[in-house]
Structures are given as structure tokens and as C-alpha cells.
Length: 112
Image (cartoon, rainbow, N blue to C red; front, side):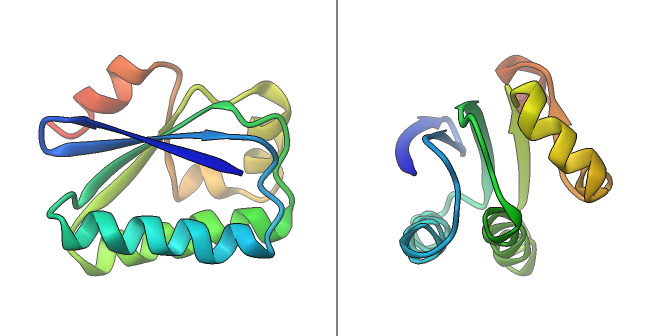
């Protein structure tokens, strides 16, 4: 998994790319979220347009990030999710936890 930061005002957009499978991805993502909270970015949008696949460990990584932001009185939205990954969200019922949007514009607007 690769992560690219793109601040949008007080919101940090994290562009994720590659498969999210656990292992080193866990520490990388957890550190990225902690770093953003420390910098004052408590609201994060995950742009998952570059993520072709996520496994159950990868879902755990996203959930950990979600809880870290929530504990810091922040929130997380997800956008541009490929159909294959979205079906995994539905199977695991995570679409009920994550705010999932079709576009970046909708995800950013969710924080207003």
C-alpha cells in the first residue's frame, strides 16, 4: 500500500494505492493517522480509487484508523471505492460504520 497526502483546508485527503493486506501496511497506516492527528488534521478522507483489493486484515487497518480519529474527536470518510472492494465492505457490513461516498466532492462536503 502506498499513501499520498493531499491537504484540503482542515481536511487531510489520503490517496491510497495498491492492495491493503496487513503486515507492514498496519504500522504505516496507523503512523500516518497518528501523524495527521498530531498535525491537527482530525478529519480524513481516504481516496481508495487506487485500491484494487483489500483483505480482512486490511479492513482491520481501516477500522483502527477510524477509531483513532474518533478518539481524537475527528472522523473519516471514504470515497472512490472500486466495486470489488465495496462488495467486501457490504459483506462485512462496514458500510454501516464507514461513511462511503462515490466522489471526492461528496466526501469533502460531508465534513461541512
